[in-house]
Length: 153
Image (cartoon, rainbow, N blue to C red):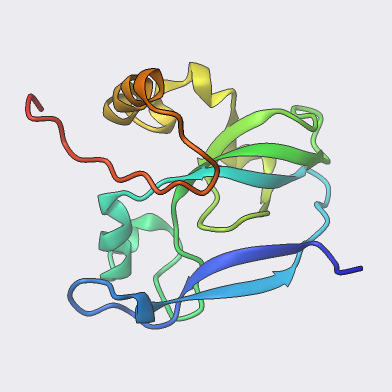
C-alpha cells in the first residue's frame, strides 16, 4: 500500500518572459500529519491570477520570494480532511493562500471558513461567471476553466 502523498507544482526555474511548461515541475512528497493548530486539506479549486506572474517576476510583496523549488503561490478552495484546531472539523470547506498543492498542511489561521458565503475568496467577477457557467454547463473533476474578462468590465 502506498503512503498518501501531496503533489505540489513548484518553480523549476524563474520564468523569463511568458512562463513555459519547463518553468514548472511536479513534486510528490509524503503527506504530512497536522500538528497543533494545523489542518490537513484536500484542494478542490486552485486560483490562477495575475499576481502569481508578478510573484514569479520577483515582486517581494507576496511573502515567500520566488525561487526554484518554491511551491507556486495561489488561493484555493479546500476541504478539511483532518483538523488539530478547535475552529474546524473534517468536512469544513475553507479558502486560503495554500499554494498549488493537492494536500497541504497549513496553520488554521491562514484559511477562512465557508468561502461560499465569502465573496472575497474568489472575487466578484469570478463568482458571477461561475454562477452563470454552472447554470448552463456541467463541470467535471479536472476540467480546466479559463476565465476571460467580460466585455462590460
